[in-house]
Amino acid sequence: MGEDLKSRRTVFAGVGAGGLTLALAACGGSDTTTASPESGAASSSAPEAAGGLTTTAEIPVGGGKIFTEQKVVVVQPAEGQFKAFGINCTHQGCPVDKVENGAIVCPCHGSMFKIEDGSVSQGPATEPLAEQQITVEGDQISLA
Image (cartoon, rainbow, N blue to C red; front, side, top):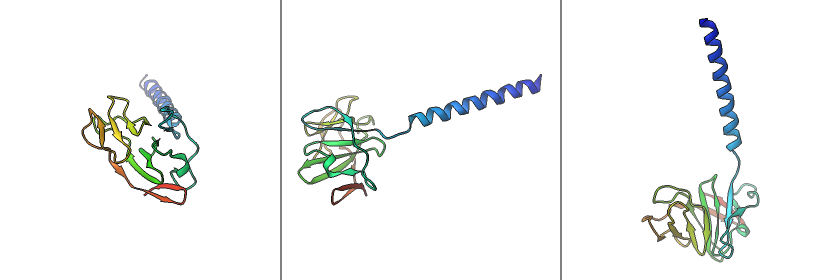
């Protein structure tokens, strides 16, 4: 009976590992959202630019685009001026989920950050978003 019990445990362990692998594979993929100041709504985005994060045309003036996989939000506060910040809110670490009306918005407790410099425009967060380095070459935006 001892061998029978070991055999069952081996089968259950194998099934559990297989299920975990399937679940992790299903969670993969790219999830980016974008919002313009006019719409305020998030939507699916075009595929990433080859070799870069996105193109300048994908980032609206006064708005931005969130790249959840890369954990960065890229904004264009003024025509031709591109900046990037980490997506984790400095209040409790929730990822920001939209850019609207010149602000990067956290859905958890309503913190808002200015797209010009990542500083807090509305709490409860008290610290700015972490600035991220990007490069803009031609129409390509890449993480530095």
